[in-house]
Image (cartoon, rainbow, N blue to C red; front, side, top):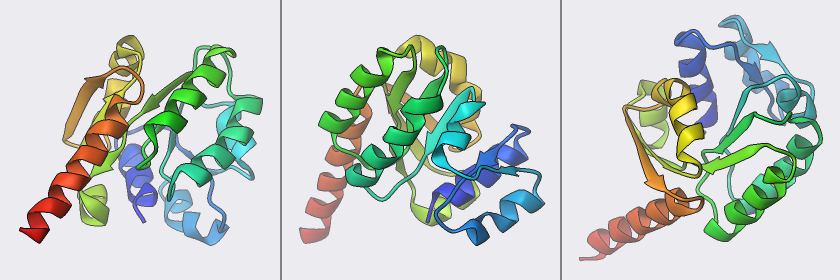
Length: 171
């Protein structure tokens, strides 16, 4: 729902983009825009300097991680844009660090419309030096990119944001 629009924004900003989805037809607009198709999660991570994932939840993030950990190279970075569990991202951070791959949590807020327009927030947790190095990629996705703190902090910020939003709706 959101990842496709963010990938198009990254491509429009001039980044080389490889896309993968469970349904290849979902990538037609991306390929037309100059992106390449990755046949698998492993292929998507193999040659990438930065991997961005936007998935439904923690279960899907963990499943994708099993493919990425096989092929991502030391010195590369994975930003998970999903609304995720702080515990899950901390566990993945630890596993990937053993391979020299940085994992940062960067959940987004702005909905599908914000993903399309680039008017959305990204709350990023993880290594600040990696955040700084990859900032231009993140700026291509949203207009409010904020470094929050250590790994898991982005996910905590998103969960607090969601809870506050629900509380305001109930008031």
